[in-house]
Figure 1: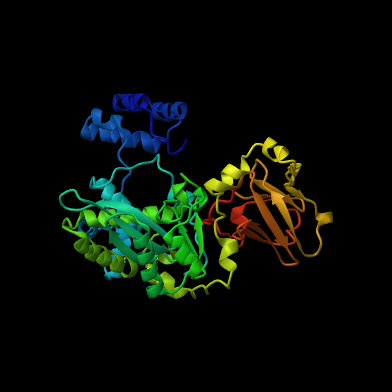
Figure 2 (figure 1 turned 120 degrees about the vertical axis):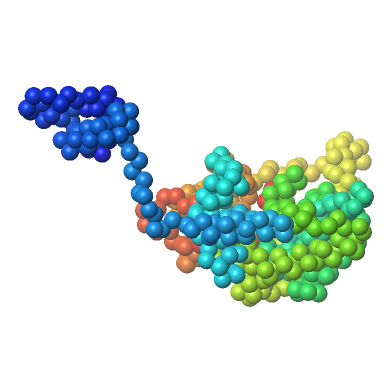
Length: 450
């Protein structure tokens, strides 16, 4: 190729070119080896002025000057900003440094340039095996107060004494609604932090938590003080599946951010001192630190203020939205009573009804202009509606859902009333497959449906 480097053996032959070579030998040599006469004489000149060894390797094509290069002073400022964020306990990656410098009115290199600066200075270790940020999809409810997440995490005070920190956040804006330091994870303190959140931000529609006894053990056939109190206010209480902490992923990530910050603070001696530290963190987290999961990396408070808050649920609506209780122990025992017990009493046992076999296919000719249909997602995580495959995600495999449609849109909702996906309907001509990416609305952080 024209711009390929000249082979070292050809360079060596040129460097040893005799002064008494016959006329036309240079042209013949260049034609034979596919190089220009100009290249030949450049290599020959370099060999005679700098020595044969210098002519065996091509010169660097790097420009002698680079007007767009980042100044060393600006690099030093970026590194100093990174160190300042790290010492304060906040995230100190390229995105965080860029946002902080911009917020302070400083000249901020691009995120890519900052990453290169930190790598060249040995401050970060490249990890190409990690999933790219663009491969993650952020799932959230559409309005503040549509759903809150509550979780507790363990922390160690000075001297090794353990305690827990309850953290209550808003799913839409990531706002820290309320936090409470307690000796143990118990129902009374769970109610206390929830009441503090309601007093500060109003009443949410849903409260999402794990299946712990102090939070929401409804899937184990039990209730809790928190569930009873929230339901009494008309708040739906929902949980993720057991051993599926990703449902409360926002809370888990929030714990991580808090721990990084607390690690840079003095060890708290007691619960009151730790509570004061947590309140300082919440204030800074809500109002000073741009969140990378929000639009334009705004702060949680800005995200909260940008959208109207959700209205409380209508009376009795919480019952339909809450996680279905599991059978109690007594109910389970009665359900497993041997059949001959009823026969001994002289009664005829009722025949067990056959389970309804739901289809994953709904044909267009069976669809009225508006209507609904109970369906079951197939093993490929799809429904086929009006000839179009709707992919709903791996968590919904073999799950019962309800499909509702009219002349403008089609919705897939869970049996708990949570929206899974909403599409324009009728589907565009020629379309045979739609995934969650094509949905115009989706609640992908809703609790899993069984």
